[in-house]
Image (tube, rainbow over all chains, first blue to last red; front, top):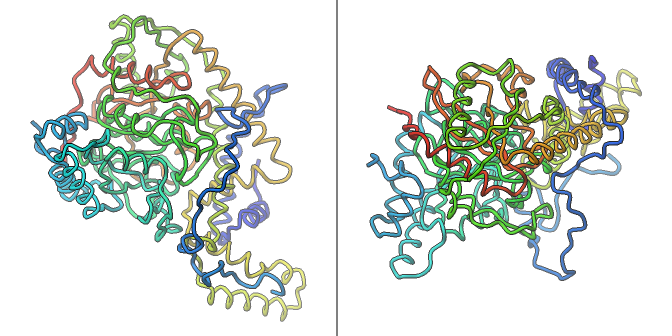
Length: 96
Length: 514
């Protein structure tokens, strides 16, 4: 199936990407080719088949409820592009 | 005797170290010298850390001389793909996004390497965030195949395979989400193991597709790969997907041939599309198993032909979710805020002047624009393509048709293997359809690049251990890989089966790099 420019723009917003107009055209073509290829999955009969999310189907992996050391605030902030010593700085979220 | 200590196998290096015939400092120096002499051409390493490596080596030498305990890798240099966290050291994933990232903790694999007294000499190149099959998606440099510098080493662990092939280090660590250890191992003529999903901890591995990613060893011999695998395998409470079963050491038994081995062969693996040189080499390898007394059994994997499509739904879906963390806020690169605010203001002004309320409403908030611009500037085209593909497949209206459907086909693929392994102990076939391709040959055709994974992705989808080992050279002198897969947790069997074939033939020489 063909992907429209508007599809690419909609998905780009969801994906928090900002392709240029040229990139939108190229992505529409490239993604359409890949989507057409993966559309072949439709021919597989999967009635009554349970999805396999993980190759090792373990559930409820628990550990004792004991506090253990975690990263210090300074270590957690050390790689932040902008921080004020106590938190991550971002542009105003409200009232923007 | 090899020209350089660096070119010896790790088992041999370790023997010399334990016999007092060399030191880790001498060995590490030899590796660093070999890298300095050859990496201008190969480009396997993003960076080396000589001071740290030599300090580590000196410490190991001191402890050995004093009669203190040393770890299982006792002073052998190991290269690590630049995707595993190493506390305080650059860990870039070959992405501009993480160009300056220094993780605050060690990946479990890195921690185990340190505990085993591996000398960490440097970090190898890769496709950005391990997405690709040629290492050309690295944001920083090209890596060349040591067998032919015009060709790709494969990917995404291209640097990991090339450094071992070039004799720069005997051992390296790679990661494999759809074939990223085995395909470059095949194209570079080395041995690469993807362990069972859950066998090696993913804690501190920068995530690409969490249900498929697995860390594994590369080396020039099966024994070297067993040695490194033994050092990193085993349960880790930090990884909830870590397998609970104990990982028994594989090296002690690796030379013992398997009696009554049943080798499965899948006829579809030899269908159209497989190059003649690869077909012949793999058939000869299967024949040598027959001569060694193994029984060759045809098995069917009816859903295998859907594996690439299944993979290219599941992997991008998981990637789009995993890579959402790169937002220009917590770590990684942020766009220039002043320029961003100026652009936003200009867009708002122009919408207001045109009295266009719809356009004005569609302009991003500053925070959303910060995310979008930071990500678009710092992530490469293939990474963005996969994020887009995953976001599309997971978006409203498509989830059932793509993601859920792919997970169901994934179970069918797994069930095919379960049935096949009722009849056989291992499955043998090709790793790639042809030997190494030229740099630039596939980079403009994403789908063609994805199809390179044809023979390898099934093992990731099913979570199986699988290995690639050299089985010959093409008429052009390019290495060809033999692929062996085994049931979950049967790494020991897989390595022994691989060793049986390896023992039946002369080892590949090191490629000439002069």
